[in-house]
Length: 142
Image 1 (tube, rainbow, N blue to C red):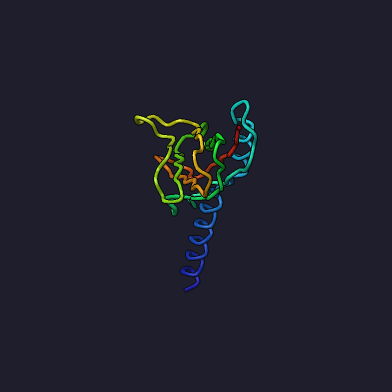
Image 2: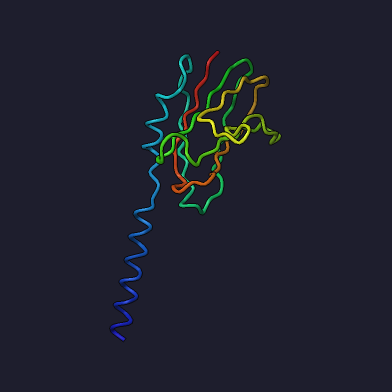
């Protein structure tokens, strides 16, 4: 009985250790992303992307956009560049307006010229990601 108890403790410790090693620290990716906003864009907000090791298939945020303003959303992955991350922008009716995947190629940022003031949804998904983790920065230009 004691041996079974020790085996269970060891298995539990191994599982906890694996979970600790796989934890996402998106703040580091956010720090990298903010200075990568294109020239002329002013930083508005950062977003932490944590897919909980693959348990979440998307992470979504909302933000009010203003008519006549250009917005940029960029991506930074701990795997380098934007590897494994996709950003998609939707309007209030959930109509897709922009995505970082164009003709099968992943882009590091999207730029959107807002034609109507309102709430917009910024959705992050994972494409062949191994970390399910990253950061993003939202900037604007008038």
